[in-house]
Length: 311
Image (cartoon, rainbow, N blue to C red; front, side, top):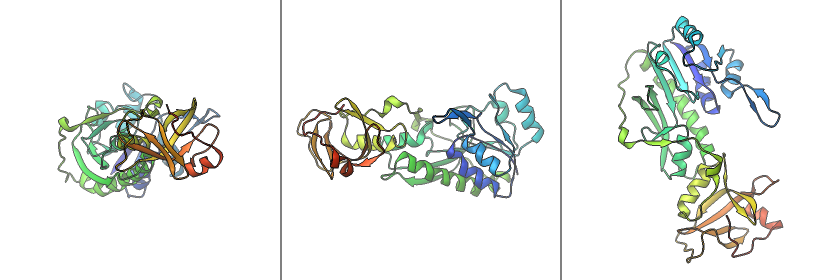
């Protein structure tokens, strides 16, 4: 098949790599414009552009794709059989959705219709879902509302959003390649989504990283994992930023009516914090000017008074 691939971040790289060795033709790779990244503020290529250049593929980076006649004409002239989209970052307009012979398909990072939107991986972890996965779907004009081609599932367990991100990116690549021949030959029986089962997964914001110790300890442990690697869960200790990178709910523990955020214990095994329901044990943290460290390492040079209230 003649394919156009549209993607931008790291999540979209494995599928591009898989397509490149699948025996199909990739006429164009479309990615967001280069942006200033890191402290130097120099323009850097998107991860997908960097991989496409490494593979010797032609890259297009239009500022906009809606009402862009030049871009649309380029696609029409190429006449792709299929457009594959993975975290491209912009809504695909109707005229592009209707262009390819086999349609436009999307690699979506959740088991649809559960999480629709920009941050399905993080929201699944933060809300305590027991499993998540990848949905390969035909694209429609709505937000992640298209008919489903196939699903691949994986348990969430104790994984962070970052770990699941990498796992799902690989799963998506495998699922895509496994279905290409059926898509080409029209052998797909797509399944409609049940809109009543959907939840919106908005983009994360920095302020969401602040933990509310009034919540259940189990919910807080999920949030710590879901906020890793960005923006990171945090609170304040004696007025200073105190990031929490690893924590668990202590089984059958009672905070004994103490104010949420109160430190109950602090030693090499962890820092126990009272919550609205149960106790949260912190095992890995970060303080200003330092890298992530275990609580054991932190306690070697620091002391936290029992009864201190975080937040």
